[in-house]
Length: 363
Image 1 (tube, one colour):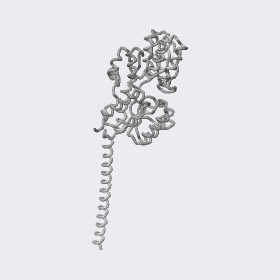
Image 2 (cartoon, one colour):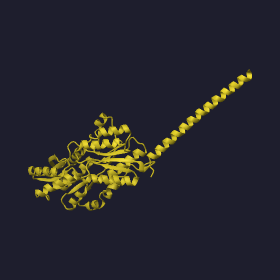
Image 3 (cartoon, one colour):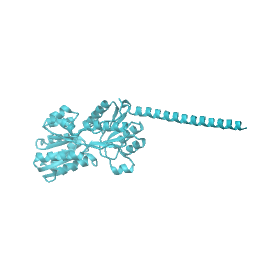
């Protein structure tokens, strides 16, 4: 009887040991299998060739946004990642741009970089991207914080130009060229955009303490023909104007056309903004006096690095980057034309790539 009891106890013990060993083994196998899967997924995620960046600009018929395309593609080629550039037909197609953005979110791009038309029109898409864990890098328009909160949305980082600084540079140049005296006008961009508001504010700030008077400030919605018509009206009402600051180069070239028509081109300084090839040619031909180099190539180039870094390093946020703009005049326009679409060397010395290195990317 005692032997039977002992045998039973031993048998039960062996079963228990075997059961525990079996559980331990299956748990171990399960754990190893999970680790293996996770490793495979992680390795796939950090392979450069598997990373696809969606890049949204405004309108590629504008050479300024073509420069963005070239900068983004240059970065993608260097990093070995894919980049898909999308635009809309016009710079006031808010709804169309939102459709493009939402389409990219639904196509599961690894990250999205966007130059929104306004500071609010893409925020619903940013919220959609957040829900899917897709990093969102902002270039151009700084997003409205109140509307971001309303949608419970957030951006990974801002990699953009200081529009305010652009206005300051333009204002200082005008003040210097006019000796602190005279009447000037502003040709505004799309009303209510960050670019319009901040460039005007910077320009006005730079003129404080001078005897320069802003006698007109009217929108032309970033369009050349509209700027020409607006300029002709301003010239008729204010024949003593000595300088015009147009908030982009496209409008500045419209100003040049108006001044040519009014036979006043040699009497009025035209300052543009963006640093496009057409503007450089106009400066070289002694039509426009200057443009502000918006270092578009650098912004696009750095923003792709930011997007890839966010994907590879699984960063929810990255450091914001406000790049410094430059001034292009007859003194350095030849270098600008030679280097285009890249900015002049001085701007590379000033604006360094803060998003390198990217830890863990594989070619």
